[in-house]
Image 1: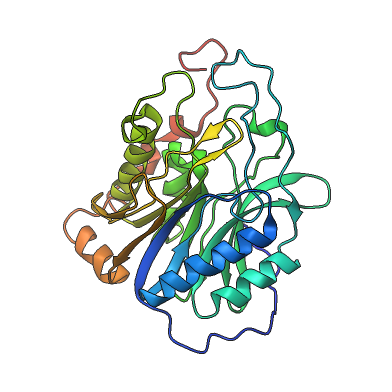
Image 2: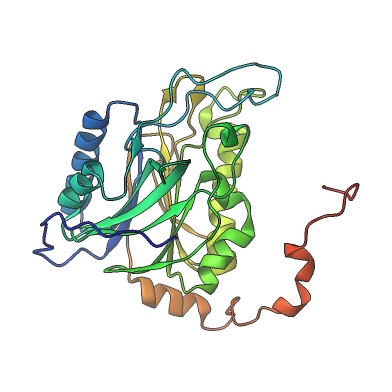
Length: 309
């Protein structure tokens, strides 16, 4: 999570945040006002259920791309109908989110710009403003045509503990989540606009191969790093994309504590995060038992012609 400027919207916490954590599954398009209203409704629902930390989907403030590059099988010359609106981390949209957040910690997705390049960004927001932001590093299926890539992974301290954020395809790379765990993450929120397969679609969204991969990555990343994992996702369709839903909370043992399945709504789990981590790490602590001196090949660049290059 990159460091970012902090907004001062004038909102104050006022109350103690709840102890539950949650991930949202909902559809968001280009209408920013409608998106902010929907964020407000989801936050109100979460607050009423004792949630202190809520992850909302990727691109929830301005919508995602309507198609990914040249299409999933590479045979289509497709372009998005339009692009998400650009927002500043210290701009009016994030100030509105801070006002909605109040005592809660929210993770929201937006299209951010540094004045030159556009980034697919996750911002961590409380009533005090933006605590930090992560720019998506790993870009699938032509996303690089419309966004520049981020370059680092880092955590931020929040009222709900030390938090790391990832975006969608980032979770397919174990090094990304491990970098956050090594930086002290207690909770990792991965926000997504994860679509179903276009080339081998299943009759049931729950049986789609990309749904299965989405769920497998969530469980594996939580278990191997022994962290609490929040997976938010978009719902429904946007342009040519149909999203797999399945927002969830996964415990540090890889067990799914709450899930929306294919429906919209909130996956909410009441848990004491430090206690859950202590229990999971009591006997076998994966971070302690690492042997990083033996993993040099993991971060090396494959030679031309090598298998997998």
